[in-house]
Length: 135
Image (cartoon, rainbow, N blue to C red; front, top):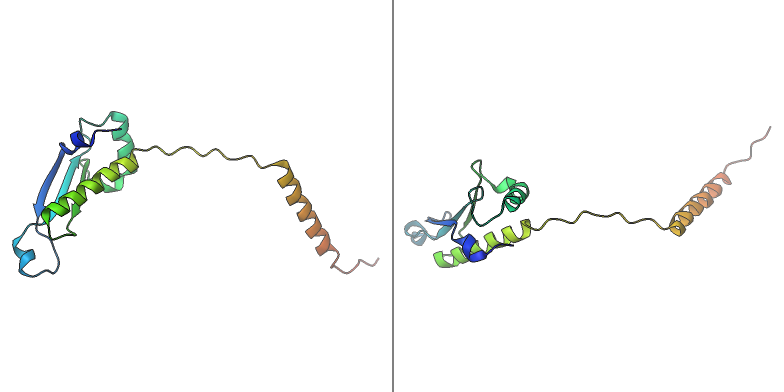
């Protein structure tokens, strides 16, 4: 599929300040990690893989073809970096798998016959509820 170590060399990381509550700690440390991956200029992915990823994760790509992910769950920059790397690799693995085309199963003749006989029986039952026609 792809070599995780080589693909991580193409990724840029940037530490930014986390938003939200947290007091003085949040105001002075850059613990949130932003991962940027240039999908279109990647050397480790084949053209087919790039096209497949463009199709499957198009809502997560910028206009320039950049995938930008952020993680600020933990107060630790190192922990956030490991979380975002794991998410990034998981995203690539799940979206590089092509879905198998569904082959519809053939309905057995016995099932069709049973459905039609039940339908006929139900129709006769309802027809017998009607009052007889008098000429």
